[in-house]
Image 1: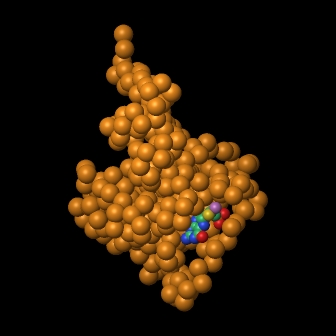
Image 2 (image 1 turned 90 degrees about the vertical axis):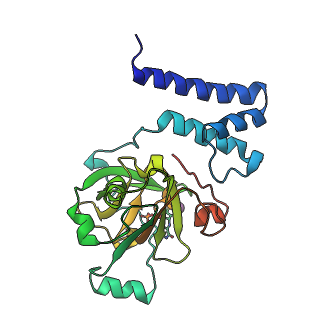
Image 3 (image 1 turned 180 degrees about the vertical axis):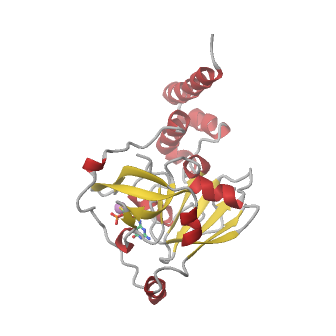
Length: 257
Ligand SMILES: Nc1nc2c(c(=O)[nH]1)N[C@H]1C(S)=C(S)[C@@H](COP(=O)(O)O)O[C@H]1N2
Ligand SMILES: [Mo]
């Protein structure tokens, strides 16, 4: 007897196996068309030239949609946490900091039923989650820390993200620093708007007062000093329309680990 879950799984296996086999036998062009049909083409695929990436994203999405980033015991927390410290130098940020971030707001707009401006206290009043996970920079270094925050999925619930939503833009107060993730990552239980680290406030050097933690993607997707989210059904309208400042600069939009 097959239960619905295993049927779904075998369908996934079939599509992924099919993609790989098609890529091998009939050529990458056909595999690309299949990937497109199933909505598995990453937004920065670059036409038929980015096929390697298309296949990586497609297989990853089909097989690991629900998989969890590895979590570690407390004893493995890095002491001290390795910081690629970014002190946002702006006077505007320093004013927020001087006021203990009481005036910091997270504005959420776009395809939501109830656009909302959240204070940090509001975000902290929601059920919090913590995780001990590794942050990995694309340049090779990494560290393990405990991250504390509210699941992004909860905030999306509060604002009523519309069913057509496909991406969440997240913007830093730091100029030209923004990213997007798809809904699979936005609604993932380990994707948190973090305000705490290792049992304390999230240090400014690590992105305080608010940082998006996406432990299934590399460091640069984990943007510091978040003050704005926009929910959308496409990636146009910001920068070159590739879905992130890093993609505009030539890095992969999807940077899964
Ligand atoms: N606002 C902002 N967020 C950022 C960055 C940045 O320069 N500005 N650097 C990214 C990169 S490339 C990495 S590897 C991590 C480093 O995080 P850490 O300082 O906690 O080690 O932050 C990411 N988030
Ligand atoms: Mo990085």
